[in-house]
Image (tube, one colour):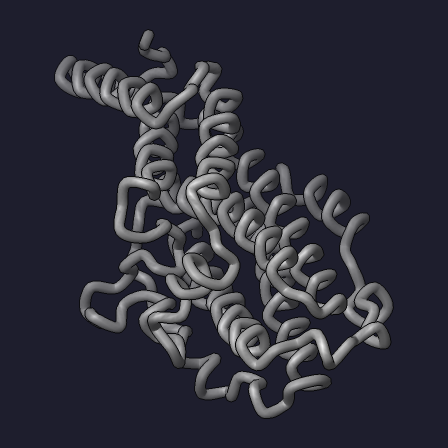
Length: 293
C-alpha cells in the first residue's frame, strides 16, 4: 500500500494555519479590492475538492489504498479553501464566501474511468502549482503572497502522490493504464491550442446540468477564471509552456519514453491504441508491451 508512506511524508511537511502563516505581517495598503476579489474566487474553487472527493470515492470503491489517500488530499485541499477564507475573514470580511456560494460548487460528477480521472487530476495539480506560483508573484500583500506559495507547494506534493498511484496502475494494468495516461496527457498538454486552459475546474462533468455543469460556471462570476489568468496573473505562453514541459517530463519518466512535444506523445498514444486493438481482436487480454515510437 502507498497510503501509509504517503501519510508519513505529507504529515512531515504539513503547515499549520495558526503558526506558519505570518498574519501579523499583513499590510492593508498593499491589498487592492481587485486582488481581494480573486482570493474569494480561489477559496470557492478550492472548496470544490468536496465533490471531487465524493467522485473519487465512488469511482474507486475497489481501491481502498487510493481511497484512504483521499483522506489526506481532501483535508489539505479543504484547508486551502479555509486559509483563504480566514484571510478574508480577518482582513476583508465583506468578501468572505457565503455558505450558499460554497455549496453551489457541490454537485454530482458523472462517473468516469478511474485511470483517466487520475491522470486528469495529476495534470491539474501541475497546473495549479504554476497558477499559484504566478498568483504569489502578482499579489503585492506579503501575507497572501506566502499563502499562495504554501498552496503551490502543496499542489506539487499532491501531484507527486498521484504519480505514485499512476506508477502502481501501470504495474497492475499495463497498456490499459498507459493508454489512459497518454490520452489525457495529450488533452491536458494541448491547452495552447484550445480556447482556454484545461483544468478540472472548467471541464464539463455533468451533462444533465448544462450549462451550469462545471465548477467555473457555478462561481459568483463565471467569467472570473479567464480574466484572472489572462489579465491579472498573466499566465502567458511562457508559463503555459512550463506546465506542458512538466507534464511531458513526468510522462517520459512514467512511460519510459522521451516526449519532447505533444506531437510525440500523441504518436505514442496512437501506436499504443493500435496495439491494444490488435490484442482485443486476437481475443487476448491487453499485456504490458510498450509500442515503439
